[in-house]
Length: 148
Ligand SMILES: [Zn+2]
Ligand SMILES: [Zn+2]
Ligand SMILES: [Zn+2]
Image (cartoon, rainbow, N blue to C red; front, side, top):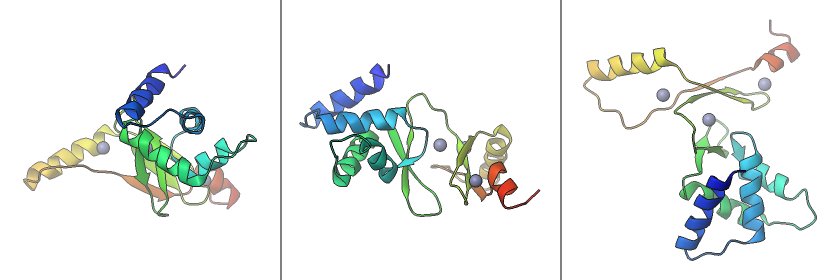
């Protein structure tokens, strides 16, 4: 499982003159087994559930390596915490972010992308990149705070 990712990471590590170490592999595994949008802190907690501790700096640096080799992308929402999401085999998408529980829902919208194309054309504006982030309360949180 996840051989492709492991191979990409292994080759990148080698090309950087670094070694595949047990902590690096544990961090990679934790990331590969995690859901989308995990922070370095989340990964740190995940890898340290075992007995042998991995330092936060190692986690942070390894997450950078995982990003640099193209397996993850850093995303930043409103709270200033860098989170990492998987990139391999993922399509272009956007996010709905719950400000209460920090749940992140991914979405794609052809309507939005088409509206943007029209807007760009009208303003003779060349796109470099875009992101749509919508903040609010998810269904579970709405129920908990009594918003119908
Ligand atoms: Zn929520
Ligand atoms: Zn995402
Ligand atoms: Zn888009």
